[in-house]
Image (cartoon, rainbow, N blue to C red; front, top):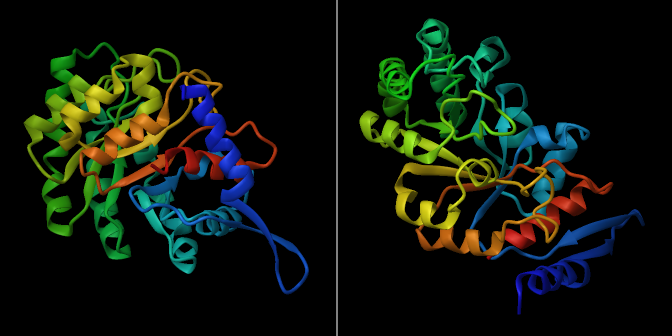
Length: 294
C-alpha cells in the first residue's frame, strides 16, 4: 500500500470508525472518539486554535484524547487543571511576555538581563503549578556569528539552568526555519542546537524539534531524530509546504516519522502545530491525531 492510499485508509477509519456521533441525554449530538493507542502523548498548540475559546479547545482536546495543550501561559493553567490536562509546553506569564519573543532571545546579550530575571521567576512559576516544560528562543542573529551566538546563549542560560535543575523544569529551545517563516533566527538547524545542548550539558536543557521547520531548513527528518533523539525533548508537527493539515496534500509522511520517534523510547509530548484550513476545526485536529497515533 502506497503512502497516498494509506492516508486515505486512515481517513476512512477516522470517518467510519474513529469518530462516532452519540446522542447525549439532552438530545444534542456529541462526538465520541476511539481510544488512542497510548504510544504517543498527544498535544496541540493553543495559538493555532485562537478562533476557539480556550475553554472550548480544552474540552475538545480532552474529548479527543489529548493529554494536554502546548504554549499555554499561566493565565490559562486553571482551565487546563479543570479539564485534567497538562501544560505540555509552558509560556510564563503575561508580565514576562518578553520571554515569548522569537526575535529578542538568548543569542544577543543585550536581552539577557530581562530574560534572566523573567526566566528565574517563570521556572518557579512552572514548577509551583506542577508542570515541567518551558520554552525559550535563540532570537535573531543580527549579524552575530554562529560561534558567538553559542557563547552568548551559554553565558545567559547558565544563569538560569541551575534554577531549572533545582525545580525539575526543562527548558526547550525551539528549532525554527529561517528560510520561510522566521528570517534571521539563529537556532535554525539541528547541528547548531545540538552543539548548544552539548556545551550546556544539562538534562534540564533540550531542543524542541519542530518537524515542519526542520523539513524546510534541512530535511533528513527521520535520520536526524534517530541519531540525535537524546537532545530532543519535545516535537511539533505541521504539513509542508503551507503549515496546514498533515494529510496527503503535503510532502511529509507522518506515520513513519511517529514510528521513528516511538522507536527511540520517547516519553515526552508531540504537539500538532498546523494552521487549520477546514471549517470544522476539531474534526481536522482529530484526523491529525489519528494519523500520528501509531
